[in-house]
Amino acid sequence: EDQVTQSPEALRLQEGESSSLNCSYTVSGLRGLFWYRQDPGKGPEFLFTLYSAGEEKEKERLKATLTKKESFLHITAPKPEDSATYLCAVTLSISSGSARQLTFGSGTQLTVLP
Amino acid sequence: DTEVTQTPKHLVMGMTNKKSLKCEQHMGHRAMYWYKQKAKKPPELMFVYSYEKLSINESVPSRFSPECPNSSLLNLHLHALQPEDSALYLCASSQGPEQYFGPGTRLTVT
Image (cartoon, rainbow over all chains, first blue to last red; front, side, top):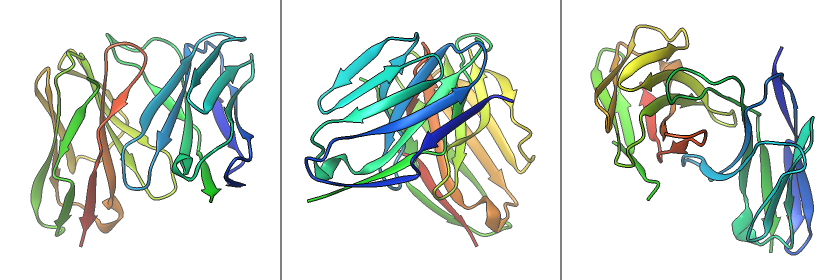
């Protein structure tokens, strides 16, 4: 069965304390891995797409990497405003027309303390 | 511009009411989605429209009825909901692999 697992479930960091979030997947036919940020009561905000092992993407204090079995979201010198839930999702085969079906992990709730 | 808008932001409805959620995007995306999200859970896919045709219905109860009047609009009609249907309802759109989400409608069924 295709699965996406995120760890840890929750992470508390001090401001400036770098760390990584993990997303492991057991799927065949991966067509893309996505990272989203979600603030409480709001819709997920798209961060990155990764397609192949070895690929890396960066945005401000965030860097996403991909291997054949997992992805990491590295957070360098986080600030309190980075506090959010970070969701990982994968898309498998191409769905109908322009649509894609996402399978989400359960998320990592990140809290950055000042 | 990657904006998806949803109205209303909040909705409280009784179990006998009929209401609708609305979603709009002007990015020229041809796929639109409805998701349901309960607290501390990831979004769950409900419906997918591709080129204004329903392409995926994830076994959603018939008290939820989607409609795609044109390529920019997506509605979700609600009727005879149950308290367990209270959740954040998210709309998303895509043209390529990335889906862009709206801010959601917080629905409370009393």
